[in-house]
Amino acid sequence: MIDLDALGNDLNLAYSRRAKGQKRRRRSIRVGGLALILAGAASAVAIASDVGPDLQLDPTKWAILGGGSVDNGRGSYVHAKNLQDDSSSTFMLEHDAGLDPYQAFLLHVRTRAAADATSPSPVRAERGDVCTATELTRAETVALQTLHDSFPAAATPRATKNVVDAAVVAAFAGAPCRGLEYAGERARFVYAGVEPRSFLMPGAR
Image 1 (tube, one colour):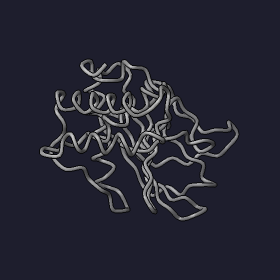
Image 2 (spheres, helix red, strand yellow):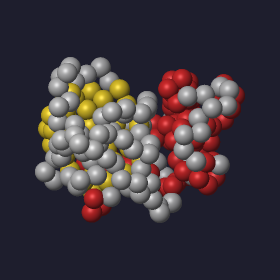
Image 3 (cartoon, one colour):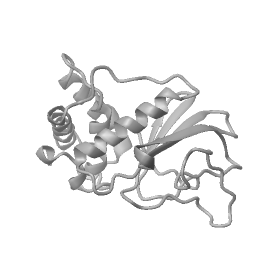
Image 4 (cartoon, one colour):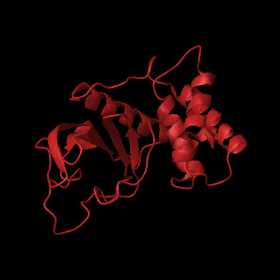
């Protein structure tokens, strides 16, 4: 899941998520049915050949390395290289409008799995099986409780990431599952007021 902030002039969209590594970053965007467009209507657009027009990057800043989609285009991704610093990134777009929270999570899992399988750079995978609905609810609950206990209301997702991630991982130390980063990220963005509480699992709200 993920340390996220707005992608600025690279992407103009409803919500954005960004995960940083030393030379590789993952950016995952939850748009809830809104179209993703390039900032600047007159700008040229670079699109991976097998990805739909929603996921577009400025070719003056990014070189497309590949991409793909899942679920008939509901989830898509593009691997790209930053032309300024040669770092590589993966942009993921998930159209999850109309999906319940757990199905939105599963769409994310499928999109990320497809992106990881074709990534030109090494990726770090979470341990365990995909979190069940019960496990995802528990993880979001732990994350929210940690936020309430440790941070003022509307604290930024970036400021709360390390503490929340550590608490969630500790809660599942004996039986980790894939989706803990997602749960922590979702809770952090809801707590910050960036995303609505309805994005959380019903039992965590």
